Picture 1 (cartoon, helix red, strand yellow):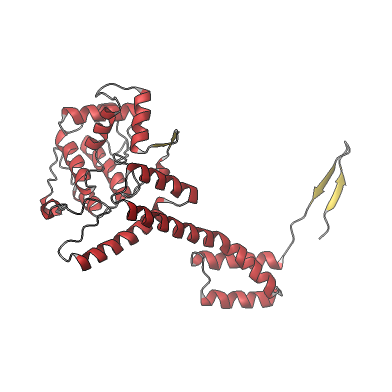
Picture 2: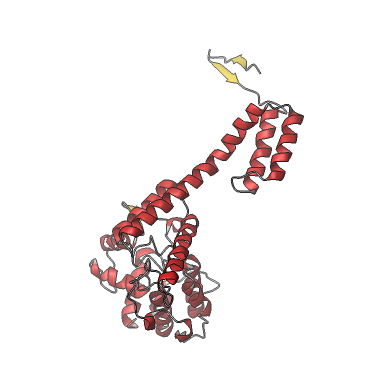
Length: 319
């Protein structure tokens, strides 16, 4: 196809390329993309047969179809390679230290972002590693199967979380069963979202969908203690409002007082800022392997001011 060239009135040449009509290669590429997408990076036997028939009908040579398919599959292959690389790095890190240190968690989070992996990608890898660890521990220690990646191997049996013993008290008749179950299953993202949901119920702000200053200042103490207790218990002391409050105080924060620089230090410590940049909700880590101590619950509370008021309430309620 030859581009057409038109003369501009001021002397410039503008090249216009017309898109090919019924381009066989383009049609084949579109179909290949559909089949690859269906199987997330693979072409099924049915798809292969269909593409072969299409190539014959369109008179696209085997060399061209091979090139097109390689280009279509490239992003999926790169993603698979990145998943494998993250898995290898994580396994190596766990062999060197378990539980992981704060520094290592921060490095893993940054590495995850460099590879372009989502929290769902990482969660799948971690779940696989955790399952292997638990299976190995069952073989060597049949009576205990709690993974050392989350807590000390010497944790007494009596301290292993027992859902039946949980106190789910509420001043406002809020049912905390779902929150407890999500936390017990390690579904941190769903638990974070459920935390906001139960807090809205406890304050009667379900229609509004957000917590204002007054609702935080008067949040029911019994409910606040229940929510925090569940987070602390099922994260082995890594997550919870009381954990965040201690970190807030450790960087100079004081209940009832807001200082932007102190809030930045707090966010750096809990992993809500990375290298001076604020993380959006989509970049919050919902992984016990990678997340900093105090990273969750994230619950949107109007940035620093809302968090400051919450910590004051935590102090008042003696959480």
